Figure 1: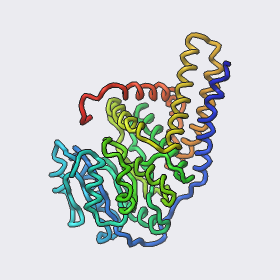
Figure 2 (figure 1 turned 60 degrees about the vertical axis):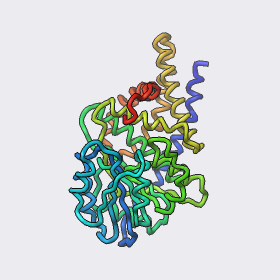
Figure 3 (figure 1 turned 120 degrees about the horizontal axis):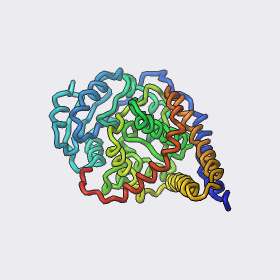
Figure 4 (figure 1 turned 45 degrees about the vertical axis):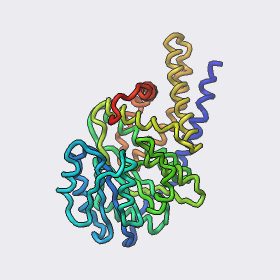
Length: 362
């Protein structure tokens, strides 16, 4: 009876070990040709007047031929000077600034796609930055592999303190699971901050994007493509394809972001994603239950340690692989503290998500 928790956590361990084995198959992609695909880069943004000049500068400095790409900035009902800032900082007639024809990021991306001329669409966020070969790398990968969707890597900008390290480790863990599942052809998630897909693919799957929900423009498209056996979804492993995004500056903003992620869970219909979520949450609950039992009965110490060890093995392997690939192996010194805090964090996010949202603009 005492060892029942260890048995219940085994499905989670086996699932993540499978994802880890997939990560070992990843090989970096190298650009060996000059692509000629016309690309539309779409940046949906709201209240980003401070960040827009940087990303516009980054995109303007791409080593991709200017005649082969356009940039569409879509202002999603900003209350600051986002639209004016974008309009002032556009560097050529290849940059367009539009007002969202609907409401929310999904509608903004839809507005951008309808206005686009590119066969290949790349989406990113206004608070991101990327290297000069970003577009070239994605376009070359598209021409050589012919995928319907390309899932590209996203990492957090570095910062100081345990909270910053915790954010980075969690993000890298999610990136590991994203890459490991995508490599196996069974992607669980993706990130609209660095995502590419064909214009035709997006328009063909519009009906599955759940425009009634505020978030999920990326994951719902992924899940819709997975239902089509003819769709080709691929992970792009390349340092030149990485996008860096800002960390949440405060715990409150961090929790609100996670609440938005959780809010779309009930609308998921991808079985593998649902299974992964259930097993992860179950493993977290088992950890918390053993910790609570330990407080009242010290005989649970070995059970708690066994559970912690079992869960930590695949978590550690995935993070070690991902941090090594991204040149952030030094973050592993924070693994154990983060692992101990993580169950409390997950439960805190779940409880926080149950609090009614007073402000719809949150």
